[in-house]
Amino acid sequence: MKIRALAVLLAVSASVALATSMSVQVRNVKVRATPSQLGRVIATVEYGAKVQTGALQRGWYPVTTADGKKGWLHESALSTKPIAMRAGTSDAATGVSDDEVALAGKGFNEQVEAKLKAEGTLDYTWVDRMAAFVISEEQIKEFRAQGNLPGGAQ
Amino acid sequence: MKARPSFLTMACFALLIAALFFGCAEVTEIGTQLAWEAGVISADEAESLNRGVKAIEKTYQDLTPEQEYYTGRAVAAQVFQSYPPLDQPEANAYLNLLGQSLAVFSNRPETFGGYHFLLLDSDEINAFAAPGGLILVTRGMLRCCESEDELAAVLAHEICHVEKKHGLSAIKQGRLTEAFTIIAAESAKQLGSEELASLTREFEASVSDVVMTLTTSGYSRTQERDADAAAVQLLRRAGYPEASIITMLQRMDERLADAGGLGFAKTHPSAQSRVGALASTARQTELVSDAARQERFSAAIQPIVASH
Image 1 (cartoon, chains in turn cyan, red):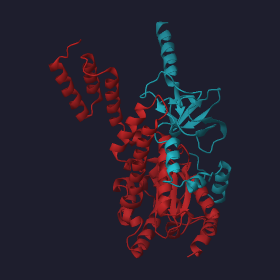
Image 2: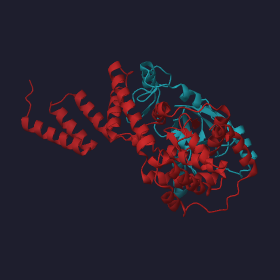
Image 3: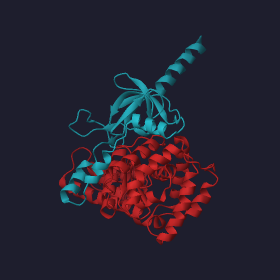
Image 4: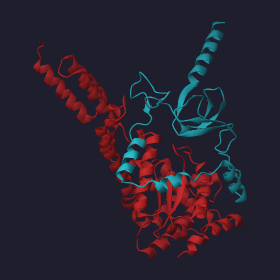
């Protein structure tokens, strides 16, 4: 009886330990139905959003979004540090020290870029044009199929 | 009025200096705590000292993907000053199709702003990976590729430089320490004009460090070898023949010899040594390029090859 209670306790604490909160560290990212960059899209989560993560499996975390959607995110999209959005935004962090958070919008940021643009130091025209080259997953799948590239599940 | 014990003061300062010298935050914290308790420094000063030491310990690995993104944008903008972009919508669209279909198989498929690719109007045989995923390929490099598989090898190599943050590693530590100190001190409020000016200076210098490495001095041999080895894995996962990286390197070697050691030759180890290092990892399968891939490759690069 005692052993069973202990086992239950261990199992509960293990599952609690596994569910960790992580933050999205890229501008936005798609939550996938399967651990693959070409998997079906369940939801899109934005920079700074918190998700509950399970154990990492070959570069992918099983995640639950704030509104309860379940799927997978690649580890490169997530940070263990909560992301404090800038003061004035709804997610602005309060009462946390610099070591605990990655400060969004601080440092090498759009404020610095705006200053360089204003000074006429750098021309970002082509950088913006380049960033506008966005290829959809449908295009990638079609490109791969047309080029006879095999399977390719990550 | 509180008397200041001179022995304790000196001891505290000695401890502080030692701690700063050896870069040990823990000793500093004890030191600043002692100094504060002894009334040598104010609580604010103690806090600021501790913050400074923590900033010193931060490296390029501590730059967030967002900071990396802004660095990469400025790096690309600066590279365009010496290598103007090639305004060829169809060829650039093909380059992005190929590049982005490779990037999804990378060990780092997600960066802050994603992977984007662009051709440069230069006959120099070269390719650059700006931090965060802005990848630039010269017309000269494109001409060096005889198939989609070989161009895939070039792009895979550049994607792996991004994955491993090789560009960011070129930033001198002193600049990052300065920047992190300003960022830490200013976390509670928006940057004032003076802090913004110093931060912008550190940023510009950091960007120049990266551009200098990309265009002039080159990455280390180890970094190039790491990117080659990772590119082989990436090609394998994406379904491209991994031996294409070897044929690509060998052809580049021939063309570079004709070009008199400019561009890529200046910033990369010899193809021979890179092929040698790859021999054990890349499977030497027979290279039969797929007809459909060959057709779309030729169609996409035709206007560029024909333009000279």
